Image (cartoon, rainbow, N blue to C red; front, side):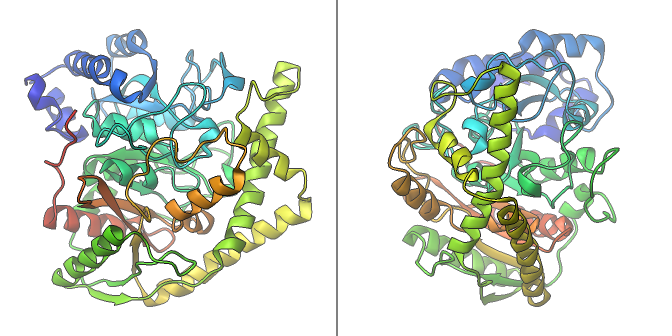
Length: 474
């Protein structure tokens, strides 16, 4: 293997090289580190470098998992790795060193990956871009003036730039799918509770948040979900039973699916014209593959949904800040936390316990509403992002003009958060590019618990319209 060969392999491909002794885990780590040192100054994707810890992990011996020897990065949000710092992208958590692993971290390690660092995230994962005050902006490898999306923007930028083939990501309001779309990657948000949140939490953001990966290939996503899904001891609830490995689904024909598609935002306004053209072209592709494709969309009030989403997220953020203030023994100030974060937490003080219960009820009602929609359709196609990746600075979490911030954010990512509320699996696929060469992600959403259908469709589309050779010029 030469340096030019490294990023021609996905994660399973690199693991196969290790298994057949064509390359060692140490050689792969050295290559990932070299690429990090060369590329990261341009994109600012990796905020923590655990190089020596990674070498020690290899020296100790790697388990015989499906990704044995593959370099891997954790997102600097929620996931803990013993002895390392997790800051949540916030100055208030600087020096927050873990004395134990998160359950999902243990499952990644059991899968054989070599964790050599952590990736940039907006503060507490609250923004659809990755521009935290603490670490600065992550740049999109396709255009360094553009956002890589958020909140898993550092993870997506690192994968798109060829540092690694897949990376940990999480999604509480689109944070896997948004950066996957902005960076030209595959990103699946699994069904609610498909992957574990413990041992410290039972759920995130009132069950809206879930962790998985962003990847270049569909099969890497499927194989990693095989390695990490399932309930852990003490979970409050679990995802539906899986009939067979997700990796097997990727090569299983999807059959003739009933697919709805829509080119508009939930408020009825049209997406960017290039995005509209991309959705229509994808609908034609699906028809050519034998699927029944029909223009239709679930109906709901986006403003009402946004208010309930804000209640749940605001309450969670307020609790996080309260717990951190107690740990530090002082009140948090604007030096500790960004302006938008403080506003989100402050909003929770104006909502009651009954308001939170009402928002939880609304969330469950939306789940039933979408379940009825999926009685007619197996899959729903819409835009991941309503426009191409936005310029850096378009969404400023330190702004005092919150009304403009919220307007710009909702125009950019109008279609995504509903599926965090309903808990459905939803994926973004890099099936189109703008005239300027920027990725345009297409989002496919399936029934609750039915990642299988999405992986079958994703495998078919990856073969029909491959993106493997589309790479940013860094």
